[in-house]
Image 1 (cartoon, rainbow, N blue to C red):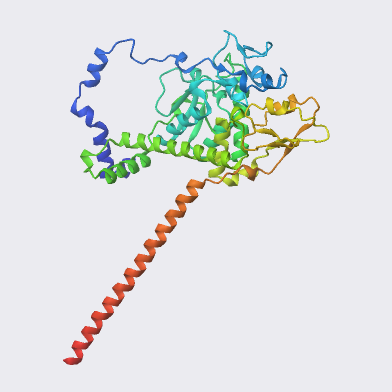
Image 2 (image 1 turned 30 degrees about the vertical axis):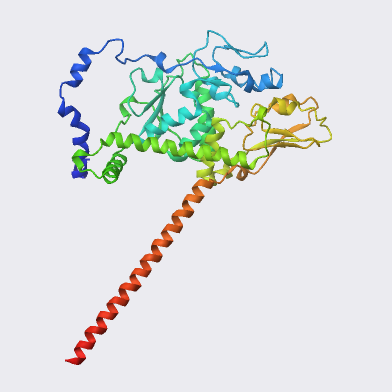
Length: 427
């Protein structure tokens, strides 16, 4: 790499090391004066959190059928989840692995560090700032993580939609799991959950997830091109000379935040578009777009061609069997179902998680899943379309002015030539 370095790289290194050069003993002084209790040390418990459960969005609880959905109970390695009393009880034996949160289609289990949006943001930060990023678990790492290592209680806690969104845009992300690490883990269902979630995402994205098994092969190199670009941008935007410019690491961090903010903007715009397109919902039954659904739809929005690999389905109603009891509507955890006064059953496909709560709640068995075209899930980004339209108009205006300027210049040159020719004639 040394032969590819230039003056800009030297400026970046100077800025990265400037604080240390200004105060060379600061790190030593801070280490000696720090409270030992405040110094960060490796503790696997810091990466684990007992999930909070909500019966209001649970398929089994909403449908009144304990067997309507058993995904969380099936994946729990210690059978710590109980729904026998109509609610959700998590026993003290919970291993805080997060597998239930990834398994639940309606996101009834919440742990702050491993919500779908949080997982996505953590992985994107690492993948953007470094050449390679690694998603791993506490047992695999066993030490304080580097900046490009995303540590989880179990890698199986990452749902399919998160992997799908990552695979679509970040090919430099890999899973780090040493050989045999899952065989000796007490999260006995974690390996199967991981394989299921990643396998489904790979099929949808038609891309493979990298796997690393040797710690010595982990690459912690920062994304050099990204850091250079952000350093140059910081110079241009702030009008500073190279030595007084903002720290390139800070500029890179700001750019990563900007990228995540853009994803948030997309999600918010998507939500507004869906709310505007769908029929109005009662205030007490406002539709819920789950975080996993948000990631799926925004990924499709950026990559519409991926829709051909999706095979979505939604519930349809047999009107001859339907008694208009409304149990299906009451059971839907995201309020995607509607039943009009004249007995028309409708589902807003963008919100539907295909959880089956409505089917389980229907005593007449009037509902059944039916496939539909995934292109219906591609929601245009109106704000982005408008922005591109404005850019095109501005570009056209610039081209017009350039053309006018060239014409005026040509007329001016022609005029000067005519004067020159006239002078020659006089001679």
